[in-house]
Length: 249
Image 1 (cartoon, rainbow, N blue to C red):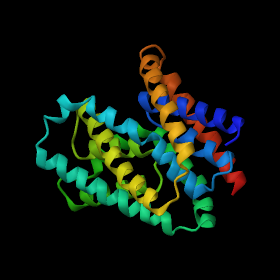
Image 2: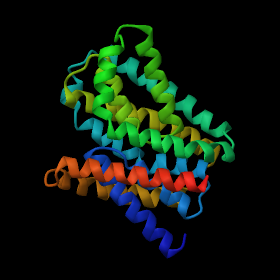
Image 3: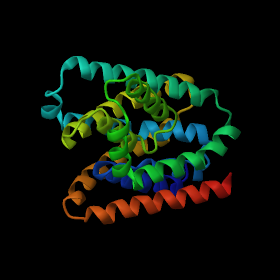
Image 4: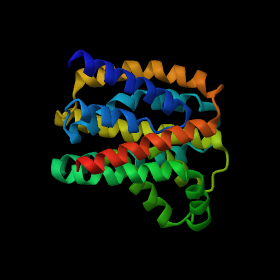
């Protein structure tokens, strides 16, 4: 890594950590930053997943009181689905050619941006149209986790919509489960990527450190910045990155 690379990755990961602490969407910064310094897209996706991985655990632990309200059987079932989905999604990424992934990336970024922009509406729609007790809900859980293993962007928003569809109302409980499932999905995919040898570890470690610092800064900023400003900024970043990757494709 050159000094400009180190600066770019550090800044991107710092703000990604802050964004994830506030609302999610940090992948809109970490993934493009890695691609821009020359990391191949598939390896950049894997390395980006590693860089934001530790933050999910601390986020889940922050909602332990709410998580204890759920039966352990239900939590275990969701985490097993998350693990299976994470493994399947990461294996799907490994068998994707760089050319195919390069074509798919702009669409995934655009999809994640739209999900972030209209996350509340998606959650309301899902709650009305998905039967929480039916096979569709279980299948949807697996599909969401496969998506998360393949491409982490927007995973938190999709998971919140899914949990709303399962009939959950407590936002703190939903956030705890979202972070827990994201941790399991990311953990499964990170293990797969590490075994496959496609993670750029110096970049990943640098970004993990700066993302952690950014997470603390984000927690501080979340109490002082207007939520609308934060969401608008994230959507704009996602939109710009989508356009850039469409041009590059």
